[in-house]
Image 1 (cartoon, rainbow, N blue to C red):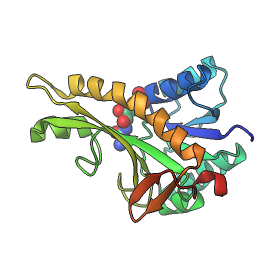
Image 2: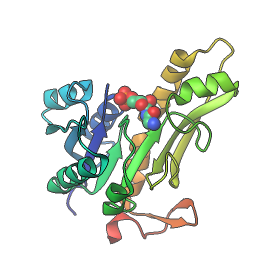
Image 3: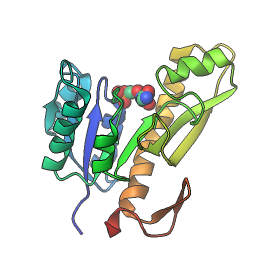
Image 4: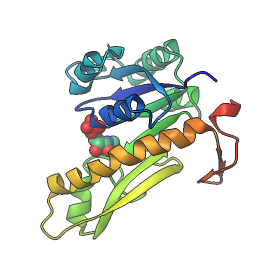
Length: 209
Ligand code: GAR
């Protein structure tokens, strides 16, 4: 069976991308990164990709309409024959047009226990709200913000002395772990969707597509 191909979309630092790349290198995740695409030409993640010898594409979104941009982006992903699109700090809402081109083939990582604190600055939202537990979520991307079926989650405590930065660091360590686990599950194909629930162990996933 051929190795499954990932397209990683990012906008900044790219630490989740690095964690995925490192898990692939060490054999913990059986996949290859076909391309890293960023809407921000100055994204650190693009530079890291180049250093790692991974195809890195800068696709600036500035001044391009959403529909036009999402067509360009989807074409780029298809050009690299990606099996799965992984949003890793990609700070743009994808249009229904993009999402429909890759049904159940786009994952996102979000730094909260969804459905709590969707949107921007989730860690800040959690601290401000006063929750005692937060965490991160890997979910399928649908047409709505941070709303698709949940593939994996991890919880971390929110400590009394936390600010958004200290909480972010604790959550990020868990993000790096669960994103690769979620990708492994989805690429393995042994899962199905029942209602909103992603259920492991029944095969109607990627392999059957
Ligand atoms: C991560 O914390 C990720 O969960 C978050 O951006 C950060 C990217 O870090 N994503 C979102 O907030 C999406 N709504 P990274 O560039 O180091 O992977």
